[in-house]
Length: 71
Image 1 (cartoon, helix red, strand yellow):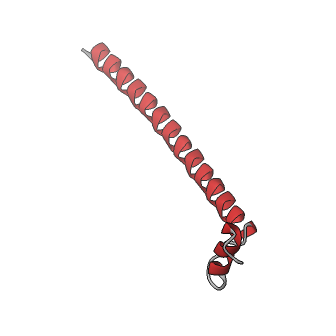
Image 2 (cartoon, one colour):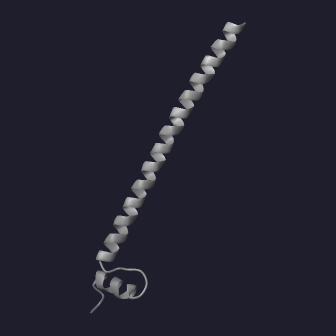
Image 3 (tube, rainbow, N blue to C red):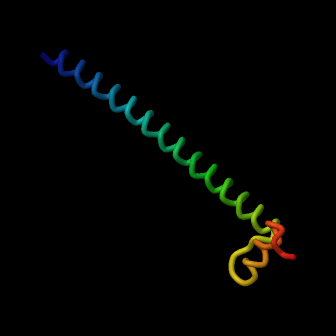
């Protein structure tokens, strides 16, 4: 009887270990995804500013300039 209990405990520990590994992999993947989104967002903002399309004062002029409507 104690052998079966020990065997069940071993299987449970292995399942928990596998689950924790998968959870760690998922967390790592989520972190990488968030970092990629941050980089893409930063690049898009940088591109919009370099094109003269900023936020706030003068943004309409920036859009006109970027689209060639500023004539």
